[in-house]
Image (cartoon, rainbow, N blue to C red; front, side, top):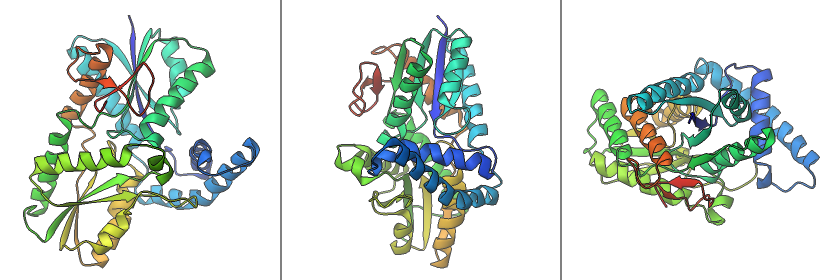
Length: 344
């Protein structure tokens, strides 16, 4: 049987132009239209276009400042490395990068997988912590895309996976290495470990999402392995819509933290992208340095062989429920018969 693995992610445009960025943003805003009340689909589309045109100049400037987003390139490298690792384990699988909002879009990738003769799919979002606007939405989009192209193929889904036993040690080692390279002592009371997580609308939390709980749990587990008792957690929120987001905002954390130095960990991300290279490395660094704080940013281990091994464990476990390298259980965030996670 030919296996296809979909590595799902948000995506970012490969070109910092209005022609590439506005449609990308429009897809995001339209998908999240239920966050605001609109009388008809036409109104939602018009609102998405309005928000995209407002946000585009700032995002284009961010891409220009970082020399373009490396997300797609890093994602393809992950897919290539995962295919090699799966073959080493005796599993010949085709591994595809599929993006929610930028090329290669999920529906286009599914058409390619069908043409390649894939007979069974594993859908795996490259987001460690399960959230409604990341893992759950990516999996919902994948199911919708299958329906749109009329492909009835067996698919198993993996949602949250931050409890994989190798994940916290991987991130903790990255923290220790970055601190050591910067000459910063994590045991120094004047040094504060700061986790930065992707924000989410409070509407989702109030509706029962465990995203905030999972994020706090994940940070605590990583800090424990790193031997750090006290840490801060802030969220990278986006004020494009007049809605409430998770608190505290990462900027507020940096503004009020009682420290001389901060070691910042982008805990929600498994690629370097605008949210790390621009929002953290440029904007947050500037805020920290204006306060007189030394700023150390921990890199994302996107190309670490141990991360690729984690992904391979998840794929193997999804294909062999109850008998794989990782104990996957029915997902509580997305309650479908074929969705599994490490948190259930």
